[in-house]
Image 1: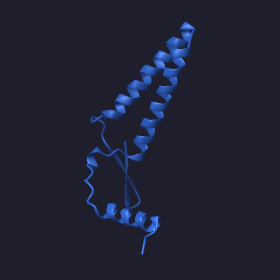
Image 2: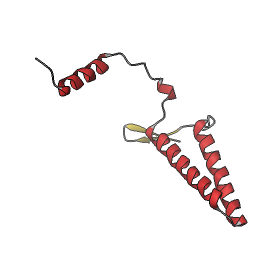
Image 3: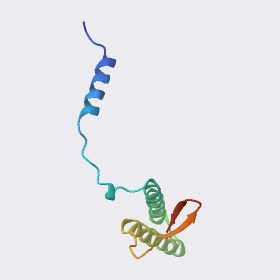
Length: 100
């Protein structure tokens, strides 16, 4: 008896799920907050770059170039976290809260 396309799809999904996946490097994973911040900065940079290409007034162009420089600095800081920062812990009841 012929199988329908739905059962084939389910079968292929089960095969994919049973295959071993490569272990992700936990240290190399970014937190969702950092990924979101990086994406926001990248989008702001793309917008500033597009605005710079169409800007005609010298003062406006200079302002956009400064904005691009600042956004590039923020992206660089996200790529290389500051190792000199120390974690501060505060005690809240029986839990410890880590603040940067």
